[in-house]
Image 1 (cartoon, rainbow, N blue to C red):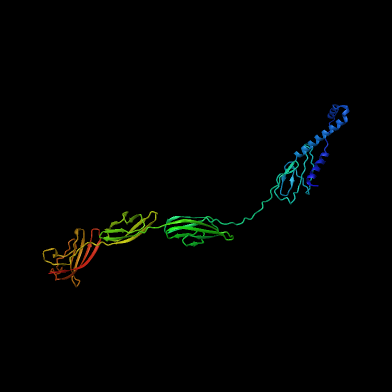
Image 2: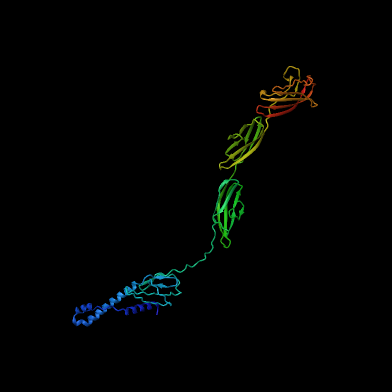
Length: 399
């Protein structure tokens, strides 16, 4: 006998044991209203109707009192709040009749077969429902797929030499990386950096795979790196006294700028005056249409050479411009001189300081005109800016 049949049998036995209370006055009234000749059949019909009504009432109250249905993983179903433990797995009904409310309480234990391990929801048993819990989810082992081969660069266009850092979108210790930078250089680093030294457009290839999987995924980005050519900056210069002439000899440029120690200029060719002796740095910055620039620089060593003239011969005690010998220069008042004359033995026979230092041929010791011969001089020149120049030479004294 299955469990459903057992349950029906129990319900039938309870209905058969139920006794409806006898009411004498009601029965007499009902009997008086029935014609006398139909007493037997009328009584039978009345008993049938009362029995049906009684069965229906009992069935209604018994089914409404079944509540609090709980289904657990051990397949125990409790019908009612008052539990009665039973030692077996069969259906057991125990009646606890109360004198006040005449309630019927019973417990149903039902073991679901181990074969029914699938999800059971809303299993209908006559007038009540058993809601069963979903069994544990089966775990599945996911197969390892392929990594992602996409990547980004920190810069995509620039001037040579261009340094680019590459970063893959998926970084992991279990991934093998292979980079091809498009200029004959490769790398197996995760996030490599590469310097492009020549101008041009470069395609970059990334190939990735997991250590324990076969698929190799590749990603080629065509012409992703654009390296622009630099201009070539260069210049030459010529020093002429206080002035320096600068000539631009750069290539592949559209703009230029001269940088001096105290000023700048955007002239194509430039002139710069330096009034003090020393070393000066001059820079030329050139820029092309791509925004790339190149800078050349040179150190100018400025040593002012004053345009001093000293005659090669003179004749003392004569009327004329060659009666004395000394430095000749325009704006002589702007200079300070220290003039010395020596004979062949190296003896200093003349010395003078100031603006006018010409020698008349006399020996400073004897105050006599010296002999006709070659003499040597040393001339120290100091201009108004403080620049010092020393000039050495020789001349001939004529008689």
